[in-house]
Every structure is written in structure tokens, then in C-alpha cells.
Amino acid sequence: MTTKERYKKVIEYFQEHMPVAETELHYASPYELIVAVMLSAQCTDKRVNMITPAFFRRFPDPVSLADAGVEEILEYIKSCSYPNSKARHLSGMAKKVVLDFGGEVPSDRGDLMSLPGVGRKSANVISLVAFGRPAMPVDTHVFRVSARLGLTNHAKNPYAAEVQLVRHIPEPLLALAHHWLILHGRYICIARKPKCDVCGLSGICRYFNSKGR
Image (cartoon, rainbow, N blue to C red; front, side, top):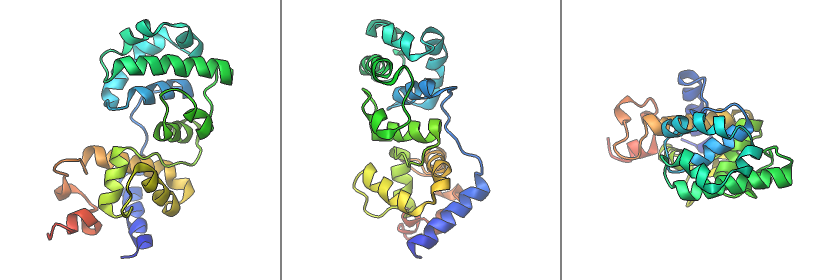
């Protein structure tokens, strides 16, 4: 099977079985999304969604967050992973958004990556999800699933996987494809003991078929 044929089959499968796919983080603005994405590092979306309602009541915009002390921010996020560093990053992010971007979260990936605590993957998520800019954020789920399915070949890191995925997935489908791969990895193609017996893609999956089944 050629790479083009493999992508075609995967895309057709998800278009049929998961026509609607979107982030499971709860947000109502680019500001709320960037906070949720920063909190989600090494933390489940479910936990983040438990934290953010009270957080956004206290810090409804970048200005209120920028004016707060790190210690107060920490009190609102202490149930997530790495709360100390995240509190510092959230404070730094808000201050830079206020000082450098007029209190508005920027849409450009480069500008987003200039914010404390925002790496390439997070910047891609915000640019794609909040502003509709074409991007392919590669988290652990996307990296694992794309490799197992054979959508990427010998990608040594998330950036290498991103380059391959963007090359083969039509730009209008990037947002959907990003969430397809995340959700498939979160619920079916899990890291340990993937649920190959209920996966509709096992017939073309490089990982599954390499096991000699």
C-alpha cells in the first residue's frame, strides 16, 4: 500500500466513523483555551475541566491574571500536575500578553511560542483551534497513533511527525485529523494494550499487522 493510499483509507474511515471531532477542553475564548492548554500538559482534560471554572471566575481575562500573584494562581491549580511551574508560566504568559499584545492572545504561532510555557505543540493547538489556522499539533497520542498506523515513517520527534502529516493531509482537514488521532489514541489506540480487537483500522495498521496476526 502506498503512503497516499494509506492516508486515503485512514481519512475515509474517520470521516465515516468520527465526522465530528473537537477538543475535549472546555473554553469560550482564545484566552480560556491557552490557559486550558497550558494546564493540560501531563494532565488529563477531565482534570483541567474541573479546575478551569473557578479559575476563570477569578481570572476572567489576561489583565486579571497578570495582576495576580503566583501564589494565588497556584491555589486555583494545585490539583493539576506540576502546579508550581504552571503557575509561574501562567503569570508570565498573562503579563506578556498584556504588555506585548494589548491583552489579546495572538494568533500567530511564532508570537504564541514567545509566551512563557507555550511550546510548538501548544502554539499549534491554539492557532488551529482558537483561530482556525492550518496546523498539526503533535502530542503523545498523535505521535503514537500516526506511527502505528504507518502515517509517519521513522519520525524521531514530534516535529518530524508534524512535517510528514502536514505533507499528506489536505489543509482543510488538518483540524479534524488532529482530533481524530488524539481521540483514537485516547480511547482505542492507547499506549499499553491498544484495543486492536475493536479498532476499525486494524486491517491497514502497520503495528497490528507487524505482530504476525
